[in-house]
Image 1 (spheres, rainbow, N blue to C red):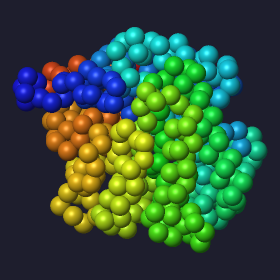
Image 2: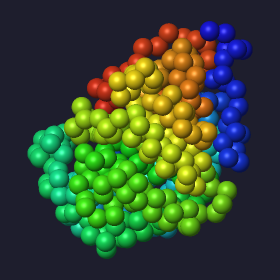
Image 3: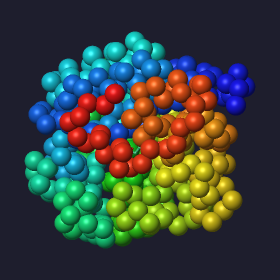
Image 4: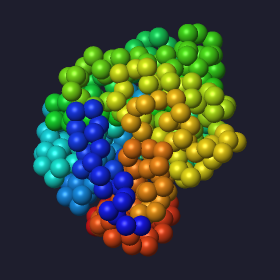
Length: 358
Ligand SMILES: Cc1cc2nc3c(=O)[nH]c(=O)nc-3n(C[C@H](O)[C@H](O)[C@H](O)COP(=O)(O)O)c2cc1C
C-alpha cells in the first residue's frame, strides 16, 4: 500500500495530545526488577529506543500496585517509593523528548498472583476459585485465593491510587488501568471468576463496580490533564480457551459502562485483531466501536503494514507487542511496506532473560 494514502502515519488527537502516528509499543512485562522493584537499566533503555525509533506511544510493563498480594511474576516493577519514582523519571523524560507518549500500565494479579513472590504471601480474588490451569512458571496449581473482604477491596483500590500518584510524580502524562487478561479487575468483570453474591457480583453493572471504584480513586489522585486508559480483553492468561464474557451484548454492555467513566481511551487486547468475536461477523474493535465514540486502541497480531492498515479500519491506534519487542526498526519497516511475518511466543520469551534486546 502507498503510505501516502495510509492512515498509519497520520496524527491522532488523544485528549490533549497529538500523537505523531497510529502505532504504539504494547505493554510488555520483563521480570527484570530484581532489586527495589525497579527494572534493569537495559529494559528501561529498550523503551527509550523504541520511542526514538518513531513509536507514537510507549507503554511500560505492567506495574504491580501493592506490596501485599498484587504480584504475579518474579521481578516485577512498582512505582510507589521515591527510589522507584526516581528510577522512572529520566525514562519518561527521554520517551517524551523523543516525541512519544509514555503510558504507565498498572495491575493487580488477583488469583493469578504468586504467593511466593508477594512479600505478604497472600492470594486474593473476587471469589475463592483458582484458575483450572497450572501456573506455567511453577508448574504447580494456583493456590485457592481468599475471597476479598470489604477491607481487601479498599486496600487494593488504595494501591492503584498510590501507584497512579507515583506515576504522576515520575512525569507520566498517561496511565492505564489493566482490566484485561484474567487479572484482578478482569476477574471481577467476568462471571467466570466472579461468583460473589454481594454488590460486587451478579449483574454486569455489579461486576463493574470494582473497576468503577478503581477508576474513581485513580481519577481523584491525578491532575485533570492526565490521559486515562483502560485495557480490556475477552481472554485470560490462564484458562485461555474460556470466553470471559458471555456474548457480544455483554461485551458491549461492559464497554458502555467503561465509556461512562472518566476514561479517555479503551485498549482492546485480542489474540488476533481479525478474529470474529462471539459468533458474530464482527471483530472485537468493530463490536467496541458500535457502542462508544471513545478512541480505541487495538492489539493482536499486528505485524506489518497490511495488518496495521486493516486494524485501523475500526480502531484509532494499533499497538504491537512481539514485533516491537524483537524488531527495533519495526516502524520504519512498516512504513517501507516490508514483508514481515508475526513473531512466535517462543521467540518473545527472550523478554524474560537477561539478554539485552536490540
Ligand atoms: C513478553 C510479553 C510480555 C507481555 N506483558 C504484558 C503486560 O505486562 N501487560 C499487558 O497488558 N500485556 C502484556 N503482553 C501482551 C501484549 O501487550 C500484547 O497484547 C500481545 O503480545 C499481543 O500482541 P502481538 O500479537 O502484537 O504480540 C505481553 C506480551 C509479551 C510478548
